[in-house]
Image 1: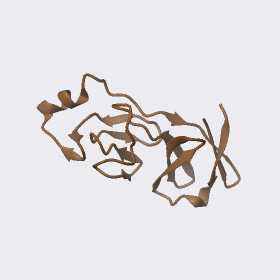
Image 2: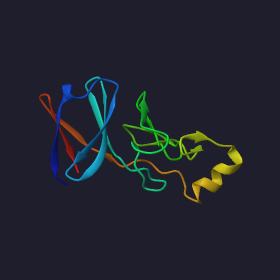
Image 3: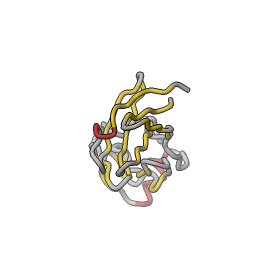
Length: 125
């Protein structure tokens, strides 16, 4: 693992998620007060971006929604909260969810450790 600076705590607004590139890897940084969490900007369903897609970038309340198939994830634990409940940012009937899931089981996001030295933030990749 290599430690990378991701800036100062005040570079991130409280309650906002920000897409960043860290040494060529896309991540999403979430700040909740003095806590900061980092997840890979990569949905475990089809490997697509969590911040670019037909459903738009949607993150609030410590959760991010995939813009491709509307799965929701916890931004700190990476836990899957809903698995494939839509397509291209739109809801869909329950009967079709298994089709869009393409046989894949619910999976968590990849999370990364964040260290803080003063107000400087570092992520271990």
